[in-house]
Amino acid sequence: MDEKIQEFIYSRKDEIVNDLAELVAIPSVRDEAERGAPFGAEAKRALLKAEEYCKRMGFNTSMIGDAVLCADYGDDPELGILAHLDVVPALEDSWHTNPFVLTEKNGALFGRGAIDDKGPAMAALWALNAVKSLGIPLKKGVRLIFGTDEENGSKDLEIYKQNAAFPPKVFTPDGSFPVINIEKGMLRVRFSGTTGGNSLEFRGGSAPNAVSDRAKAILRGVASSRVQAAIIPPLEDDENAAKFTVSERGNGVLISCGGRAAHASTPDTGINAVTGLLDLVSRITGEEVLCGLSRLFPFGENDGSAFGLNCENASGALTCVLSTLAITPGGDIEGTVDVRFPTCVSLQTVKEKLIPVIRKETTLECEVILGEEPHVVPRDTEFVKQLLSVYERVEGERGQCIAIGGGTYVHNIEGGVAFGAERGDTDYHMHGANEFITVDELLKDAVLFAHAIVEVCG
Image (cartoon, rainbow, N blue to C red; front, side, top):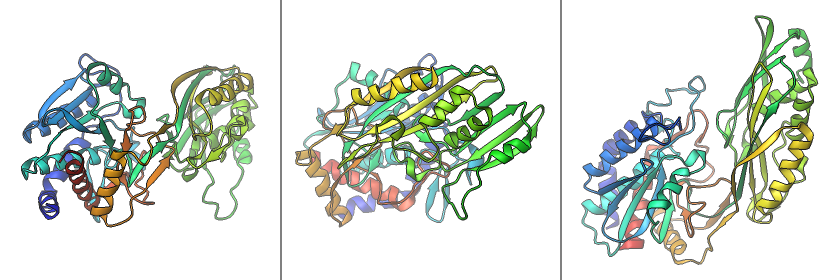
């Protein structure tokens, strides 16, 4: 059986890559709701494309609330494989290729969604297709679940839960191998108000769950020489320094800050252009709100020390990121804070330490837009042991459970775990420019998922 599954998948490489290319071509970033498209027209278009694939392969499909697509094989599904077809925005000029044209270079497939989560979604679909086409007998059914709002709070799964139940066992290829059984808690807060001034226009960050690699500001009434003098030169060969460019812009000065993109769950791997530029403009303008924000989110600090939140245990360390910040020419300000906290602290404690301090230091109002306790699935559950067994048999290396700071798609699904798709320490540039998955890993994922289906349902 092992050889038959591998042969089936690898012999259809071109078809799998072509399906992924068609999905990547759909810029399924969340947009304004439309009739029949609660998360925007492009997200719905991605669902319809996936539905086309599922019907072509002979699976029974159903659309739930125009937000989630289900593809069933067999009755009374025991296993659910949950993947998402929405993506974070792509800033084209940071990419070496067009982010919405899947491009193969040296065995790697570049494109937005290649690793998060369209590539793994196609691997799961082709895995089930392999099991069906090869006639491998299953005692229990399988349900593929494709959603469209994972990147912005998973409201799609709320719609799903109102209309259907999840299978008893669910995994998502929205994390890492071998098995992620512990996910940190998450708090996302939006603040808003006014700076009280009109000398600054600021924009940085495009996603609340990412460290931004760029930010821009226009300062009026300030000479460019003063801006240049305020820039703290980086130490020699400092790879973690923010990079600034300054130019005249009409009656103002345009300042651009470059950093390094990263997922908000691993901010130390990035360079936050938002806090880098905030530090600079707050020192130049001296505006109270900006200075308060800069004190709370110092450039280079990602552990929440300014709030007294820094803590760590076996599930990891707390992270705290100012991910987006926008200031209009009239002084209206809005921003987003992303916190991932370990199992040694509660959501309530994090809120009580974060929100009152932001209000006190900046006079800005705060709104909780996402709040979740840590997600823990014991290692000795039957499902986890099944997945680890498959991983060890197919990959030929020891399977183990890991804890992460990033919330996967199963964060609020009881007993749900992540199984794939990232491997080892490879930087797939998830949420950043030049996101990719290798061709070989895409096919390996499909083989692994097919074996998992047989292990759990066969």
